[in-house]
Length: 536
Image (cartoon, rainbow, N blue to C red):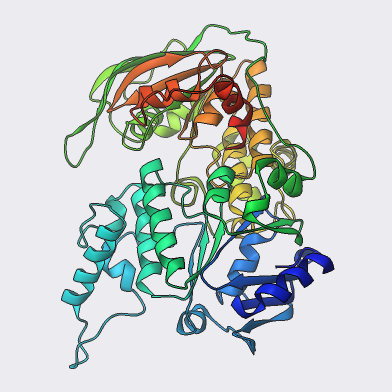
């Protein structure tokens, strides 16, 4: 890890023997875009090296090169002191390098066991696949990760957090000595994160080198041995974890103190834009009640945050409101329009939009460009005399790219060329292009860096000031406090409590959700948690 000559000399002189993988002057160019600009980076045996940086800073690009997904434009890799060339992920795995990708990379039509062993099946002496052994190992991995998932369960039947666990299990099954984790906790609950951290400490104790990327800054600092910061394709800082704090990370990432707090924003509400009246939602497969008699009004110009643990019914509520799932009881009014019997397209046309939790599966079309993804839901607004007016479409796309600050080579770039955070901005932007009256967002900042979070919420508050009603779900309590007008806590399918973010504390919200007991905080502790909340 090198941030400058002095730091590099200090670290290499004392710990060079511990370096198992080194990137030397690595550069990567996509067309005219320089994703990496001569980066020097080191991975150490038995240590957790955490990478910080905004979306598009180059972190994931470097990880793809280290794991054989991409080849560098310039520079080389050294493994155990020898220059190596990784032509594929298979090459990397054979050399003991495995990666957990930021975006889920699973086959939804296959079961958990087959996803874990796909491409490296265990064989019997006869050459047949040893399904029994694969099943036993899968079961052991699930027990290690403390997740009650059966090896025979289809991945498509798992929630996003459980799919993330399967991704982690697949990497663990490879028995890697260098394990790269790109946003491994983006869809995990607090208890699942604790289990993962326990597994990481067990791996490092046995000499496994971990490279860890996360936008959850405090969480990443907790697990780190070394911190490395990327900015605009450069490695700009490196330090031992014991010498850093949250402020240091943010300053290095964005070049300034980054904070967002909208609690003092004016509250100029209009009429009720969305009225949820006694809504009940049952899971289609099991009949289990996921949302139980929920009632909630959201006014024009109001931003309401729904907070709760995984399984609280938040996503099920949002998807039922959007028309994806059936409502088994109650009714929903959009202004004066009853949404009963309306399909998704009709609800969008009436002014109700949803930014889904899983952007890859539900929010984007992977083979399309940035521009086409942005314009797809609102394409009819560009139609005149049964023909699409391309200039109108191009103008709408350009305006939205600027509005939501998408970092892209242009509207013609493939959506897959964008970082995860910028892909999320495209999903939000395409729904804003439909001119919604009510915008719903399920985990809108999942995989988004601290600077981009502030941009996203600034955008939402700006639109709210124009009369947009916003209802969003989050599992980050700091985000709920600093970026909403009202906080609704759900637990076991019900609304259990409502808070004013100007007066509530983290502990009160977490206690209401069932996440923790109210802690006995020292004087001033709640105030400190408020000030740092936006940086979670």
